[in-house]
Length: 172
Ligand SMILES: [Zn+2]
Image (cartoon, rainbow, N blue to C red):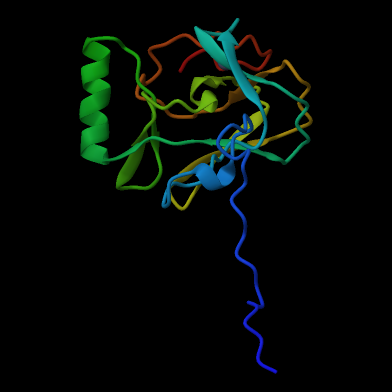
């Protein structure tokens, strides 16, 4: 006897879907990468400089904390932008991701964009396939300021480092 019943029932629309307060991962527009933030990071006043990034929860050693996303620019553009920023606001955050390209994260909304430099950091910055990611060097307690060693900067040693670490190199 033939049956007309479908083997798989189509999903019924969820009547609560539109009023649900919880953000849905499926609600993300296609093609947009998932939020690369793995641990809660907050932004607040820093004892080192301006605003800083802080652990919003305990982070275990070696864990990926998150990424900084930004605009891909050529090295020539990166240098030009750094020069222009020096003449005006002085605020720029550019990370070289290869010999040819850099990420301009000056206008990034990712909280780790505010991570300050420290000569005794608790994070390490890793560039992986053009992405800028931060990993915990050691166990980090909730509330600790998150810092990384940025190495060579466009300041070329003209800025004083105020990280406060006993082994501070003194200049950025
Ligand atoms: Zn220092």
